[in-house]
Length: 166
Image (cartoon, rainbow, N blue to C red; front, side):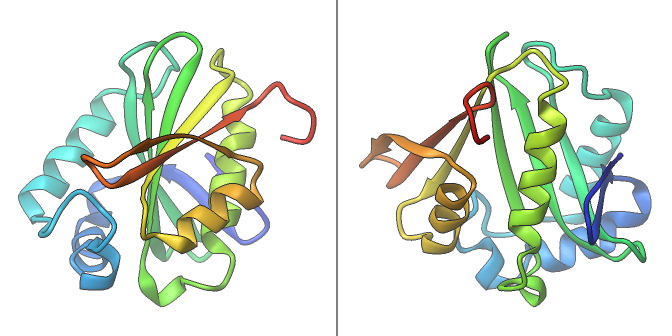
């Protein structure tokens, strides 16, 4: 579990299904994600997978973490996937009811701090080019743009965990 000033970050569990499906199906939340509709079936399957495969930082590892307020309210989730022994990709989704309050930045900052305990030194995040909020979040946390794709209409950002200031 990761604890920040206002948040707890933990593995998703079965009690999270309804909230996960609710906020992931909001049009404004799904707008910059890879899904148009997020079903209970997908949520159950993902949670089942996460519970059976704890994150170890080994290549091909992937997990989904719950972002909760300290009172236990699920407000978003984080995705982690290890590409190789040096690189991990991250993604994040936050319920739009909690946008603009610094929760996304706080959650990603907490995750980055926790990732320093694993062998990967490079963290990558891809965002849709039109997603100004995500771009600002990543740049504020020290990420630098390194890639762009017109096919997916996205941009890649990278952060080295072993650089000064990260």
